[in-house]
Image (cartoon, rainbow, N blue to C red; front, side, top):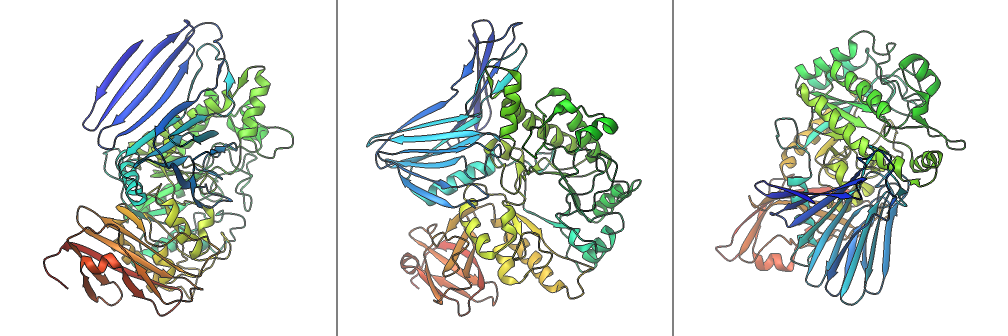
Length: 634
């Protein structure tokens, strides 16, 4: 066994290497973060011999937690579950969560808060494919078992290499959900959230805007309408009205179809070339658009979907693709692009990076609109006996490497040190992906009602601090119009502010509300990555009958922001709120953003709670918080 340990200011990394029967090299990479008492680990298996290895199976990690009254807390995944929280008394139970689709955070969510005894542990699985987490408990002990690549049972051919998920445990010392939430958020922001750029600058909140609905062309089933004649009037009007965003968002439909045609409606069924559509973007017109944006202080992000291909025959005929890279099976409409194959990986990554580099695109946005796990299993079967899980293992690791190369590419010319992790909204928010990406849209569903937006903020933001939503309220996700007012804007203030607007196509566009929202969000944004407290019970999107309130608080500066929402069907007009971040001997000054009125409250008053009166339904109040030491009775 070989052991190498390196120490940095706040963490220690140890690598242990074992040779197993002269045919398999096993490497454990273990990192411990002293400042948070967090440990993470990943195991690699590599066949360095000239013969097949033995069979690798039942790869699991197991932890034992000693303490009574075990309770498991967390949230469900995106898609059908829409980040619904849960709290389960574990004593005498066996609870299992898993993902089998190939999109790791749809349906279930691989992040957990285990309370036991007088303390707790935060647990996470970093794997963008299939995974499983099992909890069994009796009066004194809770056993946590976690794994990735469900059902793996494979040998390795010579020179093949696979890995497990990234597993993580963070130990906290006080059994309190607010404490656990902010212990996790602080760790995440310091050690998980990617940096803004290659200079290592911290990633700060930013705003985006997609111009697809401002083209005058129908978007059909996606943002397919943008072209060289449409972008400039929108950006010029944006600048004229002083409502500039940080990123201009170019979504699907910018590429030529594999047969050489220009897609007018089918943005998803024509992907795979990753070449600009010369009908929509002739010559260097796309580069001209990114240069114009940069000149005026804006960057550009561009949509891709590299795990999916269409029309492999024409991709091979015209673009150098090989049909054997396409994983397809009768009865399944999805055709998966096997980036786990080294040649396919290189072809795909090179094409993406070339388009990004030639057009100086700062941010890569990736989508994933299909469940590929069944196709991975099919390719395993084609390889023969005892190869279960090999396709997924190679595929997911290659995907992480692809993101690393794309980030390296964009960093070369001053672009982003991160990617957008979109996968039909919230399908790829596992911990390993979050080391490289952020969810610009935490869910595709979060382009609809304010009730859903508030519901997701009070659950999802506890786990993934940097995320975004839409800034309109709509009946359906892709509706071209919707409500934009103070209530909607304040419910949309997240680290990624995705402005939904038309600039030249809507004659009745209210530019004042756009200026209001952007200006107020900029004032709020310094607090959005600070400690987070939900002050009212969680509600589902169907429940509009009560208040929602939450606060972001900077513990070092003793300042924060408070949001209070009286929802559309809330019958009562008052809500009593307590601030869990207040300590004995402190007072709080609350200043209403709308009328600038301030009021100071003593600790004794705060301990009982402050009553907020909101006369009208569908109203959002914003207060600035300042906490000081108490030196007088009030």
